[in-house]
Length: 210
Image (tube, rainbow, N blue to C red):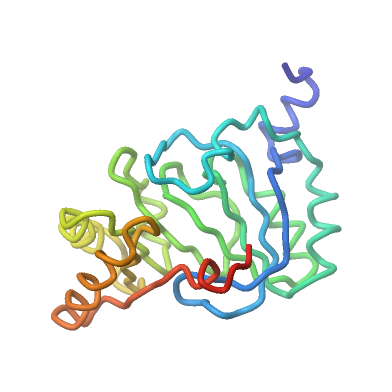
């Protein structure tokens, strides 16, 4: 159990449950192929059965880390930082993004949108999940909608989400990794028939990088 002092700092976003941080190539969505420093924040109650980072779900497994330390590590690498999870909007992102912005970094977030938007972002990638739909603030501000396709019904879900997100958001369909052979073929056909969508692949897994 955290002390009251540390819990207060976590609640304010002055400390965050840091799972891992690493410099790599963005593998998905609009910025595929670009260098970025990833900050993975622990804690998620969305509970996708096909999640490939289930070890991120329990925030108690990941030590509360001062955001000053997180920022100090991030500025050593790329000029773009991607905050991911877990579900990073579980926590208040205001202080973290403010400190990163002081160093002139471009800030991206990958989120299910399940919680209201906090923080200042240059790019918001919304990847909605059926069991905990996004809040309106994330629909309204998302730059990119990325829907994971696990089965054929997910195409219906994708269209429902496209109708809710703001009209400027780029639309991506991405095969769930364990179903990539079957779903990629369906996605290609779907995009060719519905060209408002684009194909996203988990290229980092093909490249065997983080």
